[in-house]
Length: 335
Image (cartoon, rainbow, N blue to C red; front, side):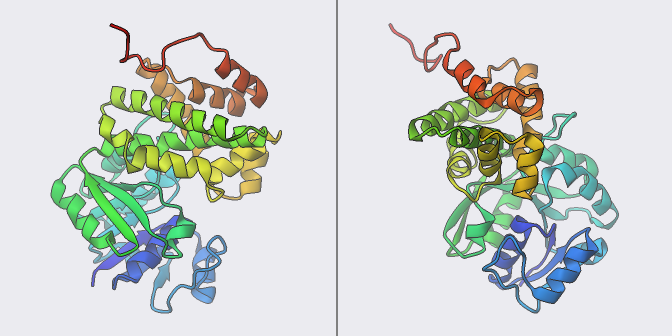
């Protein structure tokens, strides 16, 4: 039995807390919001995971030191926009060599740093890793088969985290490509917004397939320019996560996109979804990275114009369709 601290009490943190508990571990869940902890202690339920009843011997606390002290593993499960702030608060209680796995997906706005880089700055004493892949909290909490990948700079760290998470319903692969995993996980949310917008406009399967296919091409080109491995973008944290995020109504990014396609403003869509829509925060960073590395990213560019410049969604689709004619792949030509 391991002692594990879950830092963050949202849907994903609670789903992973349940998964790790049922593998025989002792779990402590932390939230910065005292009322959330009080409600979890009282009801043993989370509104966004209505079918899940949490065990009586799972601990919930607003005391960060209590959540971290003596834990073999820490799972950082706060939204990407709060990763730096939360990691900074954790510094006083983090011991040298502490194994920590981040499960948020995003790129820090402004600095354009991956979340692992942010954690490395705030918690240099920790042994940090990332867990990503096609994994909706709603399905993990129900024990439906799910497969993810854990990335770490050290093989031993990745394999240790793999051992903690592996179960008959949760399979974990390992990878050294932390950067590629994080870029895929962050930018797929932007493409999922585009897929949702297409759904909101009433488009069909052909459009969705085109967005997924060209979307992973954009992500791969940009990710490789940043130093990621091509194989990663063809794996679970790349095309796998992109497919599930673009196709499922569990996806808050797709749901927000549908509303935007129907004419809602960005703020109205986010208010309606009532959860953090990571793609909105990653869109600006994705475009800035594409410009920094001089990589063409027309879908990411159009999503930014819809979100932040008031461009009508229909006009964005027309501009995507009527761009300059080109080959499908720059690496494939005639003899």
